[in-house]
Image (tube, rainbow, N blue to C red; front, side, top):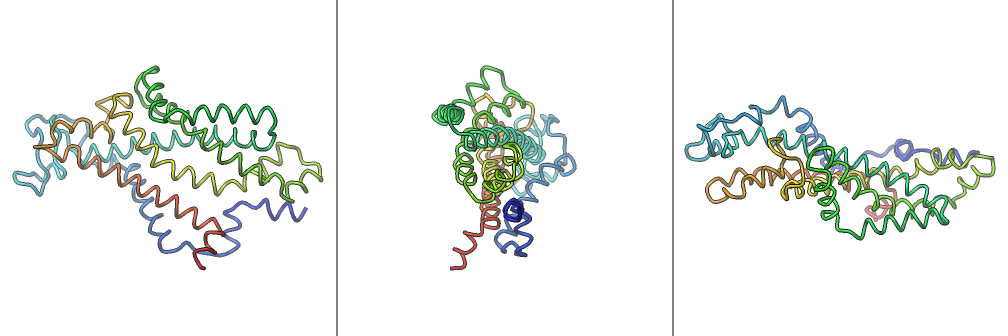
Length: 298
């Protein structure tokens, strides 16, 4: 029983017992993560204007530091006179909402499939992995575009399309981990004392996958944002006039020579989100993985 209880501790509990604090690099990554996420959450408070407000008198107004720039439009305006800063902030909000919803859906399906396929194996496991292989074989952007075109553009369609792409990779990674974990002593001890398969999966195996699930989810956010921006760029994402970063890049591609700010700032926002979330995923992996911590010391 002691063996089961010791190994069934969640990674957060084990980390707390070790008493280690994140490194400076991890703290910086977590701080940037918090700032970027907060920008999306409080976009209605930070945005100086309504992102859909049209002001044709200030069409393609330049940023504040450029010649003829106006303090009213800090990052300039688009051809319809809409404030670029406000639209970028709301684009953060939309992109993060799509990313969190898609990653949550993909993780829910992927974790469930990975647990079942790895723990029970046999015909069920083989069938689930073949379905996952078929999903992985299709390019993610092509499959998401196909679903987006079939069901029409929109937030819900994009979320389900991207979630349908993500689950297979999660399932494939977790299945391999479950195959290893289910042969360890604490799982064998749980079986010996009469624990059901459901209890073993939920109370003993799943907590030991928390590290991987958390890292995969964080790293996938950047990929999802790029995928959502690509879908919107190709016309299969969230339709206008809803402000999205990918949609803003599309809207400004015909004005790059004389109004570069229309596409530049949304593009930089996409880069910022992807880099910050990838750094955060790497930082979480380094903090929660004792093997990596030991190798870094050496």
